[in-house]
Every structure is written in structure tokens, then in C-alpha cells.
Image (cartoon, rainbow, N blue to C red):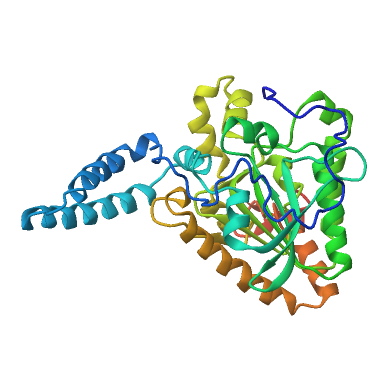
Length: 374
């Protein structure tokens, strides 16, 4: 996997290790007040017929005094656009879904912070090396309930992407996340994690500072935190980089997001030695929300607005907020010991399967568990 620009490997003395009371709106210089994208949406290849019809509709709607025929044409065109959107997005293949998950106008973590939470106060630093901006952490209120928020943020323009390292965290990012989660557990605050990363940063410096160890440590420690944890994949859920903040009591994936052990490009490069087979790899990986729900890897598929979350940030945020509030209320009534036990068993069950073989008579079946061949 090619390396991309990363923050310098030395400590950043300008990044505070404690939160600032005025740090309510992270990245204010690079984000607009309105989280919706200002520019027209950039259509994906399979969205081009929809985009063409929307352009026609916009031209008709600009007429100041439309005739009755024009009004009828506008109504018919709106119906046809809705029909085409539904037909298109109900039949996306796996590679199309990856493109939607990576769409440049898709809402990201900072967008959701503005739309979902009140009184967000960002917490910085890992108390050891520096503040990794690929992972954002902070206290917030969700419908009046205090929570700790942890989320990976990619960035939208080049400056923001470089600041947040394209959402690919270093070891200090995972240390920061775990430190804040342990603080939340100490004070009985539930934790909400938003996952959106192509993977943990694969650079030499990150490996030297213990990338794999820190992800593994997070898996172990998150599994035993005595507080409710909800994890949501909002875009890309890439490999160990996603798992590092992905151990929760309730794991949800947005309808057009994906959660995978490897990217389609990486899989194609390993199995077929060329990235051109990425669409084939995407189908083989079975990483869509629908597939994962069927396998029991996740607990919920969160529906997106018609045409994807990139078309309506506020509608997506409203749906997601309802999902979070419902599950926090449900988990808050579970005793801590039972919560931890359920979480442990939930992840132990992932990947369990059963094989059966026939004996010589062909009448009896022996399960893998019974035969010891599982």
C-alpha cells in the first residue's frame, strides 16, 4: 500500500494534551458552518443518468412563469428521478458500494459532530508522543445525555486531509482513543465510536512505535470496559485500523458503508497481482452491510437517504441520531458484569461455523465440533 503524506514523526509541542474549554468546534478554519457540501455533487459513474435528469429538472424549475405543460413535465421528471434513484441504489454491486462509501461529499466525522452532538469539547493527546488528528475524541451531549465520542476523520480538501492523515491513525491515535475511553468508563459515560478509515497508517515510524501492539491492546481493553460502547461504520471500515476502535456492545454499519479485513485493491493485488481486479475482489470479500448482518458480524444496518448519505447529510444524521439514542437507552439498563460478558461472547461467536460429513452409510452426519475437525 503506498504511503501518503503524514504529520512529522516528532512530538508537536503546540498540541495540548488536555482539552480546552473553548475547543467546541474542531477545525473551524477548514470547515464551513453548514455541513452540507456547497458545490454540486460529483456524480459517480452509475449516477450519471440521474445527474442528467436532475440537470433537466433544474433548468425547468428555473422558469419564473412555467406553463401547465412545464409543470406537468416537472412533476413527471421528479417521479422518474425518484424511481431511477431507487432502482439504481437497490441494485448496487460491491464495487459500486465502495465508491459510494468513499464519495467525496459523504458526511464525515466532523459533519456528524456538528449535526448530532451538543457541547462537544475535544480532548487532545496520548500523554506520550503527540496528538494524532486522524482520530478525534471528546466529551459531548447526545439528546441531553453525556457521552464520550471517538471518531476517525479523513478530511475533505487537501489541507484537511493532510492534517488528519486521510483518517489513517498512528499508534498515538489508538493510545489517545483508549486513554479517553478508560476515562469515560471511570466516570460511567457511554462511548460512541465512528469508524471511517482505509486502514491504520502503514509507515515505518508507525510500525517502529508499535502500531500492531497498540491496536491489539485496544481490542483487549475495549472488550472489558464497564460502560456501554456503540460503534458505527460511517464510510470505510478498513482492517485493523477500524477494529482498533470497533469493539462494542452494538456494532452498526451504514447502508452504503463497508467493513472489511482488506481493501478491494489490496485483495486484488495479493490474489490476482493487479488492481484492475478490484471489482472482483469486492464481490468476493462479502463486506457489504447486508452480508455482514447475515454473517452475524454486525448488529444493525442503518438505512441511508434515497441516493446515499452524500445527498442529504441532515436526513442521514437524523436517522443515525435515532439509532444511537435507542441503543444507548437499551444498553444503559444492562448490569455492567452482564454487559462485559455479552460483549465478550458476541465477538467470540464471530467466525464460528459448522461442517458436516456423512459416514459410510450416508445416513448420519457428524458435526465439526463433534469430530474435532472444526
